[in-house]
Image (tube, rainbow, N blue to C red; front, side, top):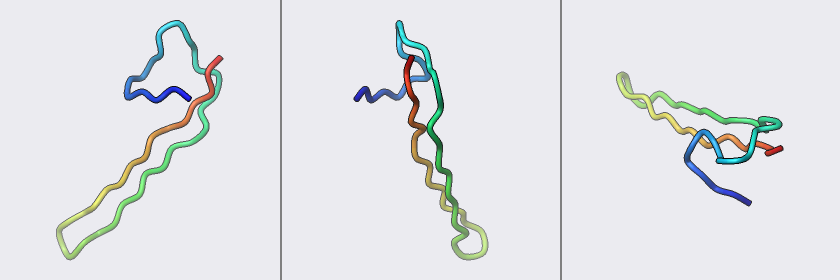
Length: 44
């Protein structure tokens, strides 16, 4: 397993995106809480 915070991995190409999750919740009248988890990819 390779973990990275970059959009590319040197010498490898992305074969398929496996999913991304974005969730939000309204708190009170004027606040929003946003939660984002990373995207898994399959490398070629």
